[in-house]
Amino acid sequence: MKYIEWNKFKNVKAFTTTRDVGNIGFQIGDEKEEVKKRRSIIANELKIPVEQMIFAHQCHSDIISEVTKNDVGKGSYDFKSGVDGDALYTKETNLALGILHADCVPLFFYIPSKEIVGVIHAGYEGTLKEITEKSIRFLKDKEQVDPNDIYVHIGPSRKFYSYKITQKEADAIISLRYEKSLKFNGNDILFDMPLMNYLQLLKEGVAIENITITEEDTYDNPKLFSAHQKTPLGRVASLIMRTN
Image (cartoon, rainbow, N blue to C red; front, side, top):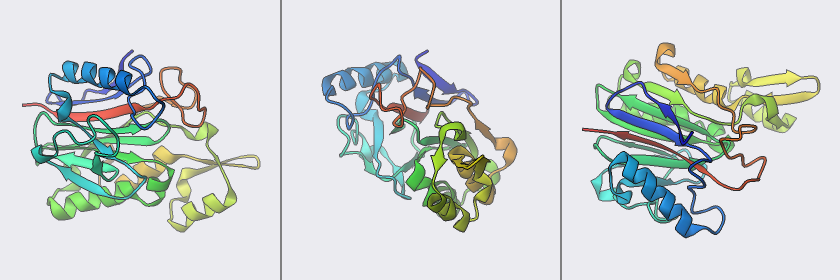
């Protein structure tokens, strides 16, 4: 299987690549030319030039950036030239917005009433910086989005079963009032990172019925990469695009 797809809307293409496609990240490993070839294959299947696959220059921040046609080529052929931030959105058609990840949480969103699509990269740091909550709030404030019009799909990520954290890390989560995302197994504290992002969506008014989540677990799924497992080395891409 090449892609794990979100197929809710006919005019929106959204998917996470798998290991069948291979490593998509320029910042990982030393196979730059192979990454370029893989990206070309994806672009061909999306029926767009590679330059219209625009990636975030992600750094586990809480920044959301709007992407326009002026950003064509950013992050397409290298990592550092990407659009700064860990969440991207656009009102344009045929621009595929992408993030790179292994165990981090990808969140795809579509707002039909505003014809906006976007994607969020929520790793541990970004989740605790409340990037999902801040991104939705930004869209409400800057784009006058009604949260009831936002549809979100939470893609493949590391589930809580393997995600042990320290008491200090748990205390940081509790201080943010997201203690519901903690689970306990004997003396172990487990972190449900997808759940914390889900709760951030609810906090900003996104309707429960508008949120879906995949059960794919990056930690032990042979179709995906895991930064925790470390081998094989690689990153998948989560991409979203609105078509004409």
